[in-house]
Image (cartoon, rainbow, N blue to C red; front, side, top):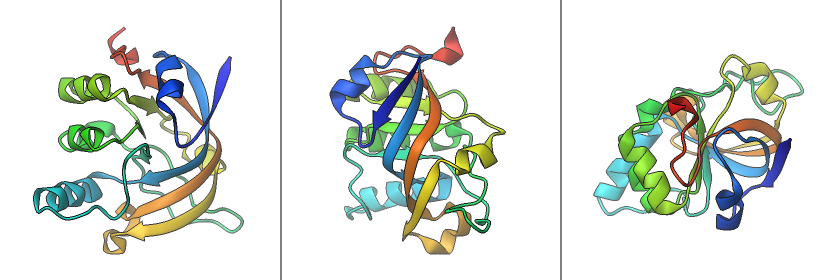
Length: 175
């Protein structure tokens, strides 16, 4: 059974999710990869405000290809999440609710997920063209100089993913 969820996620939604659940997400989320995460980290360290409020938001680790005619974005498959692990606990402590990527997370990230009642979703690697069909709107947010690693706000409809790490620390990669 696939759980249909609306973004932004509520704490109640997150608590009902279990590692291994199949879900679809509908609503708005943000994109950010390693270069953007490094900038977020530096901004926070310098006492600067982030370009958007991460509280209750979802970040998708993606650097899409150029859009083809009729699509909001080009193929938009997930990036390996471990590259954001150094910066993720800070964002979770600031209220980030969810992340979407692929692959394992380190112990610090898993602990921060548990402490903050958050969730980590895995999108299916190798399904970039399929995933892009779920992205219906793309708005640039910041860091345009980073090219495909710029931060965008996507509107998604029935974006498919799996709960990889639930808010209790259960992890599909450690089964």
